[in-house]
Image 1 (cartoon, rainbow, N blue to C red):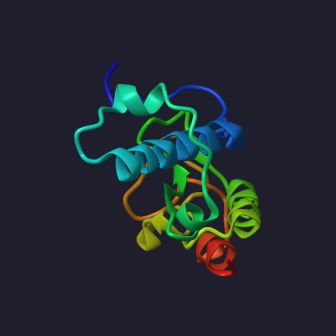
Image 2: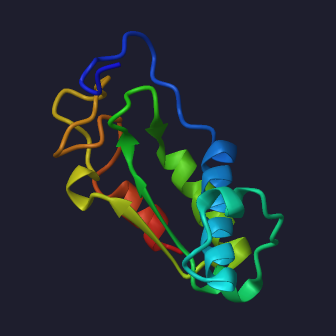
Length: 136
């Protein structure tokens, strides 16, 4: 499937639960590596049932691509950013970031069905993601 294909139909937000699962998996891999050394494989980490320690959460951050993603059926909305900020606060994560500040504005002409380098491809106010994530 070509990364440049354009999606037809309405945009669908990425379910936050799926995004959190990805972060949890990445955090678990990093934790297993930290506990077992650099020789551990991702398969070892995936088979490990290691809970996230508070000390690990305090050193963990999250970065996300805002708006319509390179895969156009993945969309990170302002509502997702609000949920992410609440999750980060509840877990005491170290930081939140986004890709990229240049995209934190509405495209000329409104919503688009594909990613743009200079706008989010969503209907939004300027700096709305920065304000939402920066509040954390």
